[in-house]
Image 1: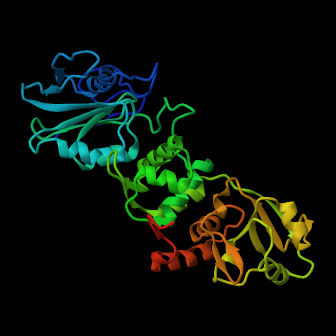
Image 2: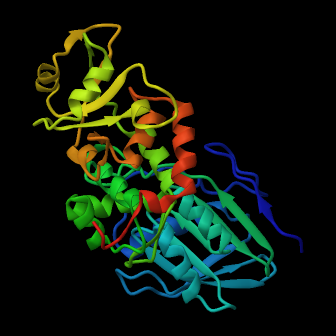
Image 3: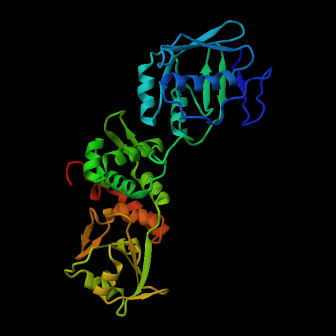
Length: 374
C-alpha cells in the first residue's frame, strides 16, 4: 500500500470515497478546557477527515482525563497506536520535551484547543501527529501508510483581551524586548522581570508571544537560552504604535542645540534616529523627551508645522531612557532602541538601520551586557 494522501478543501467537499462528516474547521461554542473535552473536539476532526472504512478508537478515559492512547485502523485491519498528549496550550518550547518523552518506537498524538503555526511546524519536524479544536490536523504513520492533513484556524479564536495578542505592542512588550536585546546570556523569567521592570504576568505573556513567533528559545518552565535579537527587534519595530512627534525650529542651527545639550541641563531626553549613528550627518535632530514643551523652552526652540530642525517624540514608555549611552556629553538612546527606531516609525531610515545593524552584529559585546551586570 502506498501512502494515502487525503486532500482536504477548506469549507467544501472533501476528496474521499464516500461522504464524510463535515470537519471541524472553525471554532464554535465555548473553548474546551478539560482534557477530555479537548480530546473529543480534536478527535472529531480526525473522524471527519479519515477516509471511508478507517476508524479511530480509544481506551475508556476517566473523566475529565483524556484517553492514554488511540488506535487508528485501516479497512484491511492493520492498525497503528498513538500516545495521547492532551493540553490546553502547547508552546514551541514544549515540542522538544514532548518528543523526548516518547520512546523511539512510539508515536505521539497531540491535541489542544488551538495549535499555532510555529508549533504545528515543529510537531511536523518531529514526526508527531496532532489535531486541534479548530480543524488543524496532521495524522501520519508508515504502517498502515497514512498521511492525513487539514487546515483549521490561523489564529486562536478563543483568545480573550487578557491573553497574548501575538503582537508586540504596549509598554510590557517594549520593556521585555529591550531587556532581552540589551542583555546576553541564559536568563530566567524572574531575572527578566527584574531587568525589564515589567509585571510578572505581562512578562510571561510577552515571553509566550516571543516563543510562539520563534524569536526566543526557552527551556520548558526554565530559562531563556537563545534570543534572536535582530529578528526580535524587527518584529517589535513593525508591531509597535508610532510615537507622537512635534517639530521645532532651531534659530541657531542644530549644532548649537547639540552643544547646549552637552551642558548640564535638567532635561530628560535621548537622541535617536540618524543623529545617533555615524552613518551620515543629520540635518534634523531626532530626540525623545518626556516633556516636549519644557525641552523646547530650555533650548530656545520654536514650534513649526514644516521644515523642522528638531523633531521631538513623546515616548509611550520611559524604557527609551534606560541603558542610554553617553558620548561627548550627549545622551543617546540604547543601540537596540535606535535600531528599532530606524526600522519603522517617525525616525525611519532603512539605510542607516542596515549600517547600524552591521556594527551591532560585528561586536555584540560592545552593547549587549552579560546578565548579572546591569
